[in-house]
Image (cartoon, rainbow, N blue to C red; front, side, top):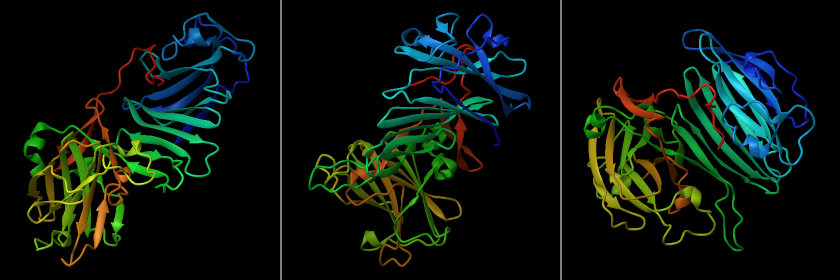
Length: 423
């Protein structure tokens, strides 16, 4: 994607919009086209453009009824600078050949919080439109969203907040990519009570929960791997992966109580008298979402996670940390080529989760441990939060023997209703 333009708008300097002869401004004074940006081409190779309109100053209370829609005529003024109860109105429109102009975004900047330093930043690159809104003073915040223009789809979203007076680890927020079904939560380092230790700032990857085809859930999982839908382990709790062919781990929630785990390895060990030294999966479940926990001091009894071991060789389950009384239902299938296994696990209720693969080529000790989160033994604050993916956003289906992401239908909106709505 090649950048075609960047617009930083609503400078709060009070520049007055002159009248414009553009049809988008007809009977809407004050109104002017600030800039027209080339936005690449649509799926049929036709040119796309994005137009930014400056609509002057509006009363905040009145404008609140128009934000997210096309601003109507009247109720705005061209001159002066923002005073109490006023905001600066702007719109962005998508222009497509042989189609009506589509409103992408409408805003009215009232300074966005104490200090009045808020702004709206828009970037347009080939077939993509990104809007970032920021505000606040000591506690700064931002919300960014990227929209694919043809077909219209929300592709990513992020939120950030930070404390300007925090000495370290003061940022928190989250990010989600709707195309790859990947994202994370950032938890700022907390201020703990005297004598309590802190885990510091934490970056916790989301484990996605995605709807799959009924046939896959019923038995297709035994023949097809998790593919691009499976969340790959990105954390080494023990050792390092010098040989990428040595071992790998993927996990995917396909229902609130159903987890699929795919393990691949170049050498399998077990069963033996000590399951900890066999190739096995470790499952951690916690009753609270990890991002809701401070990480100060030790977890309470009500917060502590439970751990199970599932041996790859025979699918046998071993209760571990926390001595969980709940049982796991495990189904096991060998993938074609004898290079991997898929486990289908039926889970008890949980809010935090992490999956670990323990690889033991020697059969005498744990030599490599891959995990879906930076899990620390017995610490629920280090597990994966769950991201439930609505079916209208994306699902997963088998393609070429592997699960693939299937994007939901394009977004639909009336021409005068903004595709991107402010939170």
